[in-house]
Length: 365
Ligand code: FAD
Image 1 (cartoon, rainbow, N blue to C red):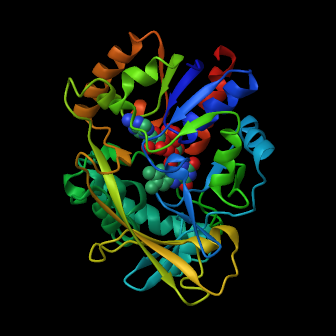
Image 2 (image 1 turned 180 degrees about the horizontal axis):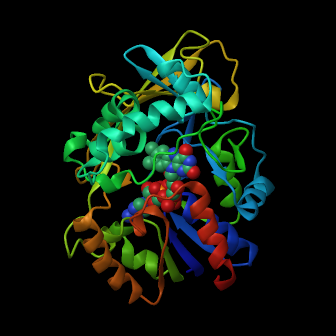
């Protein structure tokens, strides 16, 4: 039987990047994934020439030169810059909160005018310690921005009123006193030309890949095939949920193909009022400046997570952090298993974080 150096559970970004680094060192890897495709949450499906981000919009951004050079050595990136809009009851506002937003909200034309308004509104919370997310947001940016651009969106995301959410969820709300709609502050940003699947395929070029393979259904047999295991699935599942289940927020995506060339004129529009059940509409072609005759849009609905649903966002509250700490202790005792990626570390990571982590340990491969 063929023996591999590494069995990698999960063909997502962590698993693929690890496989690539191992390949560069002459190591042999077997990558398994329970899904029927590679790429994990970066996976795109091509619909009439448009790359549809099947697990939510993914925009690559980083200030880490090594990470940027690494991904660019595999695929070329386009110049896409994320400049989302917010739609509140039919009114459009630029995001992140910047001079364009303040002009749209109050007609403020200068940074001085805008900051006077924000400072005045923040005094509502003066002298009081914020006791919940609503109070925290008002203390940071005042009531207008909170009511129109934060409240409904956050309540949909978490499925609870902001008055029942802890203040710590929002530590900072960056406010920009320039006319700059670029959502990210990072130095580098873009989308792989031809989509994310190309990036992942390049990373997995030297590995054997088995799809539709759930590790836990044939663990012993798979473990026997390799010297070491890289596990990027759910850490609580790895340990048979022995301390209980970690919780997540999940998303439901409703995709629609439309026979018009342009639906909303932007890749991402957030819907910030509570009454509209989705949080945003993604129009995929705009990530790659597509000029097809048709378009594809996806509405994103946040919802409660139950076992079997896709685990998108970890709920890093006290209970779950305590539970994760217990699982992490068990993981640290496993000498032959590397736990990597967002599910095994129970933490939201951007793509550049994941790549940075792998590049950091590459010398140990
Ligand atoms: P995953 O991509 O989840 O890969 C894990 C893989 O393991 C999956 O393919 C899964 O099927 C497989 N697996 C799990 N259990 C088993 C098992 N038992 N057997 C076999 N296989 C298994 N990052 C950005 O930088 N920019 C963005 O704009 C951005 N947008 C995002 C939007 C959303 C809605 C979400 C949820 C995340 C976003 N991210 C973004 C983060 C990005 O998705 C992650 O950084 C990245 O997917 C992490 O890769 P991973 O390999 O850790 O996890």
